[in-house]
Length: 235
Image 1 (cartoon, rainbow, N blue to C red):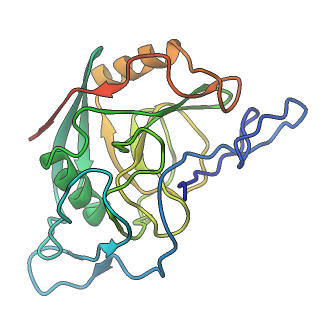
Image 2 (cartoon, helix red, strand yellow):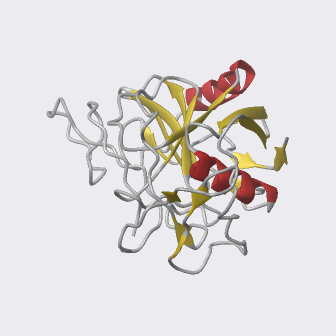
Image 3 (cartoon, rainbow, N blue to C red):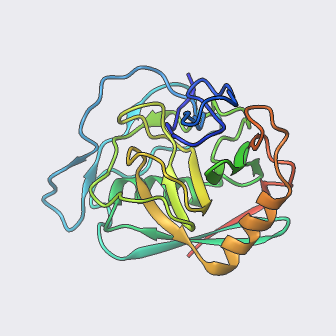
């Protein structure tokens, strides 16, 4: 199953079908998932940090261990740099706003889960500008073999520079994430866990200018730019 982000711009539908006559439609960001009953991701912790719950789903798209679940940092920030052919994109990860999401993202980055993977989906117009990454299969169906719950208390707007989780519905976060390189009016259903720096934003915007193959809509589909993440640095 794919994870879907619901949007309401003119150009894309929930089923990712373009209808030129419709002024408000839905765009879906695809990710892999299977039906699992939601459980709390974050529980009270007796230690210094948060306690997180990561629920096993299917086989990981790439060999990876689940993240730590206890004493998870819930303050401060982390830094993860994603290097593309066109330049580095530095992500500042907000551990206070979304500790379990940050913990998963940093763990996957440290284990090389994102290294040599291709960001498979982009919207470069029609009200939405984003690049979707995090699936080693490049199909939108791959994940880390676990799900965890949304952390939406600090999620408000998807302005340019925001990094957020893609999902297939409530509490189905895995490894796929999207980077917003132009203000995009998503509903607040996707956990925001970080931001990219100005240099990284310029890298993404340059990719966006190359457009897509229009396989989903006039401005949405597989990116035409080289979107392979060649190196990932944590810290």
